[in-house]
Image (tube, rainbow over all chains, first blue to last red):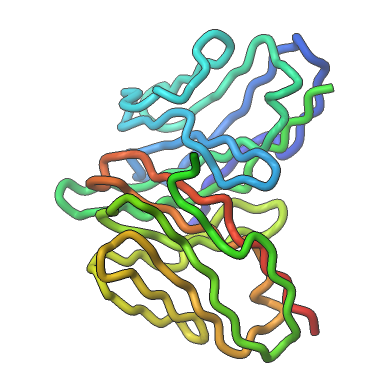
Length: 117
Length: 112
């Protein structure tokens, strides 16, 4: 079974430029997450989707970040314009949440390492 | 303020040694998970603990959830170079429907 696929794996851009990341979750997983991981830190949740609906985006900087999950499958995360402080690894994860089943197991992709110069 | 405090931050040991890393908080969690992350990869789930006092074993790894569900430990017996990586603890404050909060991790290096 294929895991979570992310692209690109690496991206270097100049500040003020736009950038987009793409994620293809594991087939059948209804929940999709975008995390940001700064150097020396654990991942921090940016947004969580249940099917097509964004159910938790409280940590997403909405002035420059946007995300979408069309048809409840693939997702894109966009930054426009990028700032120096956005340099980080952006991780996508997916899970299959069953009501009443407790903490779901999240499967992570390899991430996109973004460098803003 | 970090919700989950992990210690030590860095650990370098010789192959064959035993080690314990810790994950502490002042909050009570419904469940806690441990992940291992290797360079250039995403975190991979090792275990989920749910019940206070619960102990789970995964080969040479032993995970324990504190009685009050506020802390956890990971013990590795006879460490191998393949155990090298970033060990992250993560927890749900309430049910699985709330965000997973990660600690900063313990970076382990096992030298052959």
